[in-house]
Image (cartoon, rainbow, N blue to C red; front, side, top):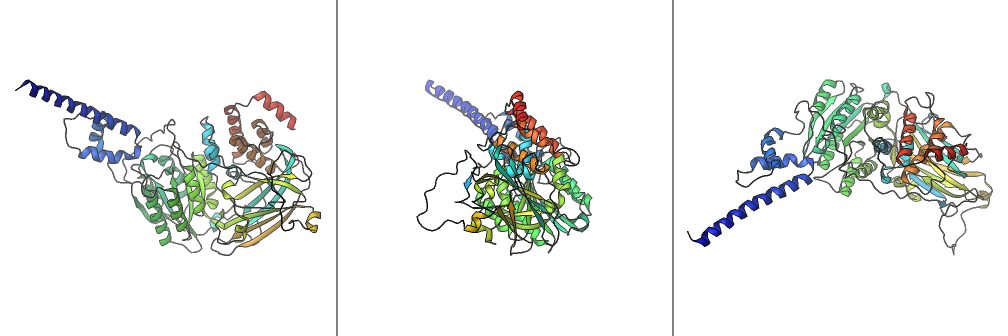
Amino acid sequence: MSQMESIGKILVSVLVVLGGWGCAKSSSVRYSKDRPERAARDMVAAKSMPASPVRRSPRHRRLQKLGPKRMEMVGKSRGPVKPAVQPRNHNTETYDRIYENRFLAANQNPLSTFSIDVDTASYANVRRFLTHNQKPPKGAVRIEELVNYFSYKYDTPTGKVPFSVHVEVAQAPWKKKHRLVRIGLKGKVVDKAKRPASNLVFLLDVSGSMRYGNKLPLLKKAINLLVQNLDERDTVSIVVYAGAAGMVLPPTSGQEKETVLTALNRLSAGGSTNGGAGIKLAYNLAVSRFIKGGINRVILATDGDFNVGTTNRSELLRLIEKKAKSGVYLTILGLGMGNYKDATLEKISNKGNGNYAYIDSMNEAKKVLVDGMAGTLMTIAKDVKLQVEFNSSQVRAYRLIGYENRMLKKEDFNDDKKDSGDMGAGHTVTALYEVVPVGVKSDVSTGKVDPLRYGKGAVTASDSKSAEMLYVKLRYKQPDGDKSKLLTLSVNDKGRSFKSASVDFRFAASVAAFGMLLRGSKYKGSATFGQVAQWAKSSLGKKHDPKGYRAQFLKLVSSARRLYGEKTGKVQKVAASNR
């Protein structure tokens, strides 16, 4: 063998070795960046990979050994496994930006129109952040959901109207020269024994990202609570989805609790997330078992991380919007952290005639699925929307606090084809307006608009002399109806101070101020976390807070005060001056 041939063979050997190391390195990088749900697919590849002298990474060798044990069908039990703890250092959560409602001049924009919102997910999610000593993203703070997390003692409706309407006006605590208007709705309460039969389809995400203890394991326990309250009137089905979708429990009587829970407890997490396929299957199943005059609902439980199949948000929304026309309603239960897709879930809920809650504990599961079971499952009115007309002789400017993604055009109010929020049995809905009265000096800016060249002003002689502050109009449809009904109510301002306002008024104002502080709102005025605590304290006790939710709110305020660096001394001084 010549010297040149020897050198050539040595070079070839070196290149082979270097190529092996390069392959191992690239594989290691790929596995470190991949999502957990790709593990099953990678294990198949590892198992089928032929033996090679090329050096493989340790990760490759582990996959080759574990591959046959880990590849199991969706829904098949692997026996008791200790739930994994979800890491907090990896965060791909998504929240939509909120463009805060601004003050509008009443003489230029006398009408304010919006859809109701009964969702409570934002409050529970914000609580999760504060409990973990983290500032919630501003997009996670939807003030209307913070306020509506709590129940208020509005009078129950009488007669055929499914809810009552209440309005209260008093001083705005964070801006003493301004007024605060609270509009409240109270849905009729339905006795559990008299509720209609239900057709429930649980659509459960069992992809790899759901393996953590605060996701699928918590979800199983949560659904167990609901199942215990079902009976022979109810039918339960379970559809799951990961890389594909499948039915793991055909329609089963609510009496057969052991059968339902056995199917539920067999579920395990693994694979990617094809939510679109699961949605189609669940709705088709619900429609096939549709109960006329009953409760027909898909309950979607997920972290919202759809990554295969229909993954584009607009495509998912169109799919949900189409399925909602079937008459089947939607409930979304959000779970987990790190990869939580609140922006997607909130929009899906809006498009699917749905309600949206976030489950971070068994206490929250009990609140949503047991204590609020009727409200979560039973719709008493659909397409509920409000239009408030402000009298410009009494009101210079106004601002709706929250409801930014529920705003409607003024023409939408009388358009029965326009989809709006739905109201469940026993639900309370609260909306707050901050108002600048005519003649009050204020730093509020409504922008400048040139005088109109044509036409006359909207204010008539009779309007200019009216003592009415505003006029509330409300439209709603029966759950199975297509034509809306109208309710109206005129409101006068009696000049109440904040101190003389009702306990519920003061508490709702404190929650709204809390949301403005978390969001860093330019409209927060003189509000501080210390003041929020002072305003809310009068609403505690068994009479006003039988479940302890308001006491829990005060703890969150205390946590936020420390987290946002508000000095105690300054807080006490400001709080004292507010009395």
